[in-house]
Image (cartoon, rainbow, N blue to C red; front, side, top):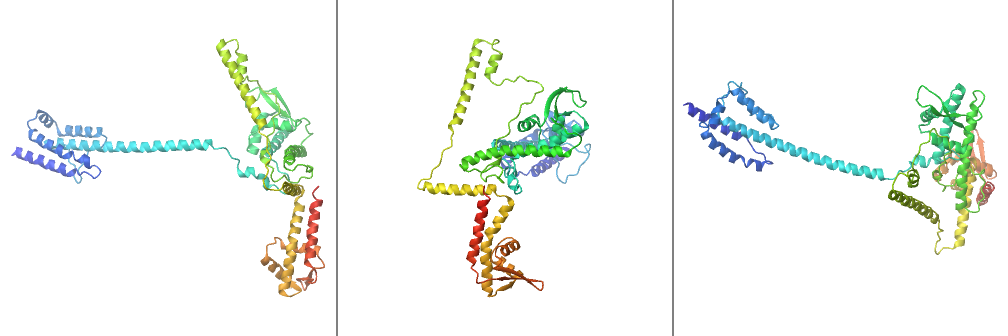
Length: 509
């Protein structure tokens, strides 16, 4: 009876294990091996009781077998499988059957398959990350290889300059700001009777202007104004540094006491020198663009529209005494002179050929620079005399724009708008069939007919230029306008245009 119960228990365990394994659609080919394994298990179940290994396995206590099965499954990478809705019973009450070992084999196989699927998924994700990393590196190389462009707010900053003020290039303006901040720091040290070090000044100027200030900027300042500072190399000991030799700054002609006008005058003097340097490059541009035009530098109120302000060359650096001389080898000739007696004849000849190649490259570069000369572009089929007249007229207009100031420009715009306004006023009176109109109604109808900007200023200007034709009246605190319809409007417009032409020619030179 015991043998029959044992066989029935093994068969029920077998069918339960078979039902619990339901292959999925994605694992169809893996599930094909299950019937073959089940046949092997069926053959083994018949011979299990006679097998010596099975007898030794059965003789072990139940807790020891559970520990062995759990260790084997955890080595595969997953937790031991549990049947759904299965009640957990203590290890001492569970009785091992011959079929339980085969069931554990199936569970271990399933755990291995799941671990393999997880490893494949990790490998696929790793390959995706590798491709994304390669694409990012390629895009970074392309971004680094792109040329650095000047921001628009720096390139066109001169357009925001107020009327009548000549703007400076952005690198000249930054040098001016650095000079003003440096003057402030040096004057404070002078008033405190402290030694003014260059590294201390650089830190203070950087905090004020948010830009670097080092020995090269100081050299540019001394190139523009050699009497700006007195720079010397002295030995001093300070608590905040271990260096003994420092660049010391001081005024050439220091002021007496705390005089704020001293710093303001130095800044204006330095700015005038920068403007004079820019004006020289501007004059060279005018000689190429408008040959024969004699526009004085003092009369220029704005730069030429085609003059690229930020293309002005940078200021050279003046010589400043260095703290220590570092021997730097620049080319092969210096290496040859330095170690001529240390190497063999073959190495000496190689260095001589390298020095000759470098000299040849320098001569080729200088020859290429000299060969690139500007060529004059001619238009075929166009009269050259007509082109010359157009160019002279355009040059004259550009010269007028450079010389005229803000107030004259405003007056010129008013005179240009007056002829159209006069004709519009006459048309409004003719359409209304009246000789007198209220001023607010007249202004409203003028605004409906066209855009004239500041109409109040234009109407006042019309009353000044044509008092016999345009007559403003005030009756009982109400403003009216009366015109003379018999007066020729074309003659008034010609008078205004003649005045505009005379004003432009008189302000030119």
